[in-house]
Length: 341
Image 1 (spheres, rainbow, N blue to C red):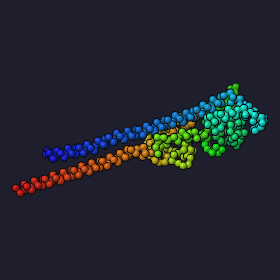
Image 2: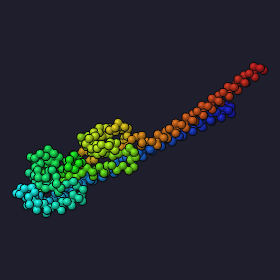
Image 3: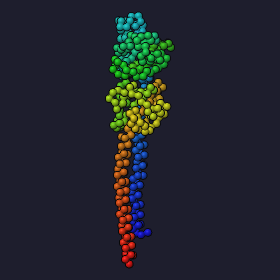
Image 4: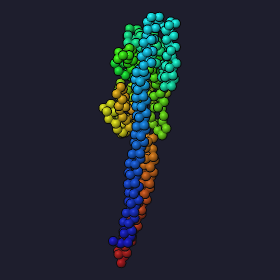
């Protein structure tokens, strides 16, 4: 092999090396970026999973403890008697209310409840901390017997119960209910109901620090509708936006995972999802970010690598082309010399 050919082979080997090294490095870089992006979403998902779970478990415990307080049983008995003998709004009734109002207002204010209700076992709403359309009505026979308040009352006669978010006209927002039986001498006297606002949950889910321009964390209920508001909608999406994706279907099967799927907008996203695993609701939690944003660094590197690879390839082709032309001219020259001689 001539020195020129050896130099050509060496040059080609160097060029191949220069192309291969970035490509192999990019593969490892891409894998690391994907892992980091998914881990970030999983961390955000687990943090919110804990916060949301703790919030509902605390409300569950609050209503149970307050319902078991002897003062609550005493208050229900007294208010129910005043309500039945003298009527709602009577002097005797209002005197009974004054005994318990300050304590119940303390719970509403300190815990951020919308309202607290005492309902006797016959369905009469004998007391509410704040003026409310339910106060003085019967949840079993009255006009509200098909409302969420009535449903949670019925189940609250047996055990601690939760009723999903519904629109509350007086509050101009969504609220939900927890209820627990009030017992006296081991007999169910009625039900304590606390009403909680959606704003507590919304505040947790709209914390998007570290989630970029497209990241969001949201809840989906067992009916397939959101229990939170989408960052991509100017209108509220709680109980309005239906979500049926590969991620939600897998999560409702009881699986927690992270993968790339099309979200409810039809946009490819990195999705980290999990069931909430609360005994009183069948909801799922999803943390997602647009694939384009999550992998924007990868996409930028890909473009640069393509430019570098194209430039190196062009140089290699040009080099080989010029080398071949020189070799051809040299061979022609030698042939002419041999012919002339």
